[in-house]
Length: 269
Length: 269
Image (cartoon, rainbow over all chains, first blue to last red; front, side, top):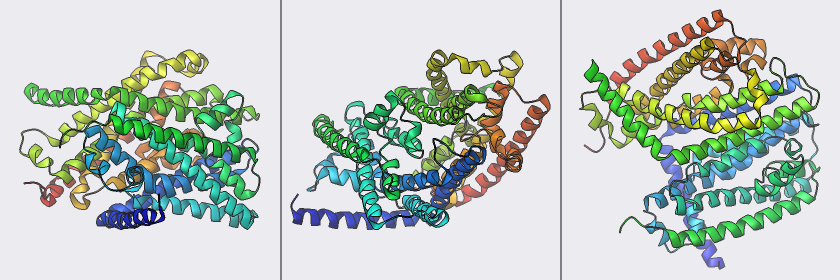
């Protein structure tokens, strides 16, 4: 994509972001309740962690504060990327493909993959990301973790990489709707990963599970890797694993997208 | 009376067939939920492997508990809230209002059909676990009376869930969107229903509070009935509490429905 093309796409996206904000703000009370809903979710999760650590001092060698930090990082990708940008967009396009009414989108003079991935912003999910930021700040404040600027930067880069992995996985799930039409359940796949990423990977990486949960269902490298980089305790091999998985999923998702578009069946004019 | 019942049976039958169309989708959805269940197994196995005692359950008991939460969680369906909300927003409710049937029973018939289909699919998909982990089923207290009480508690949980979410759906008459409020209730209920952790592992004060809410009787109580360890007096008390809550919400529904209809704008007419 040329620089002018990139600018054009960013301009379009900016306009879409504004439009979606206006739509979401039409239902202000619902907007407020969505914020309360995400807070209720977080409260349940923190209560669960607290009850666990009231009974058991450590889990897999980690104390309460590390699990809270992991939930914080989990909320960053869940809220900041998954629900805020791609969930509504990809769910919408999957539904349009199922009904055979996506022709208009496929013929727009823009990069179609970019457009279908970001065109529906769910502003109500912003609170999830804010919860994540709040949790990370709370842990730093309460438990005296020392974080260097370099670790923070490294962690952000790895968080973006995790976000890209999640995006590719969800995009692949969406692509299945070209073949099986109703892909609603398959698109639930990323939600399943969500629960695993909130716990230290030592719990899931015993024996053969280590390979499965790193390369096939890559839960290990999603919230754990940026959180550990943040604290400066990351095993460097996980950076390589993250890059490998990201490259592999990018290729798979692009191939499926191209093959899928060829299979698309329109329901009419 | 018989003629009247036939109408709702027909709604039930139609909804049953409608839900069955997407049975593969439902089955895959539940398969993914079983993966979430795997996360809980890993966590509790880790806790047990560190020499901790899981009081009142043991490892097999806790695994069975989580398996049962996944198997019966379809009773806590919020489908009626979504259907009612969509009907109000689209104006489809107008067509139903002029027809001679009870609207509440119409939505109830639809919800029951969905819960039954999902319930059966969940049970079928749970069966392989019986082969892989036969020992965990030793924790079941199978007798004719426990099975009967279990079924009664499930039916009551289903009626309560319908009453609760129908109230939330009715709020759409005023707010148009009530998805946010639905999210608040669903997310708060994760800890209150015992979905995240069995309620008897919670601190005493918190548990006492939860047992006065109706949520404890949606998942936790039916599971405890079939796993044993609950006295007849407690079961009777739980049934009385649920009946009181069902009555409260149904009264609320009748009042709100009448008031809501006056606010209804009948879009599309």
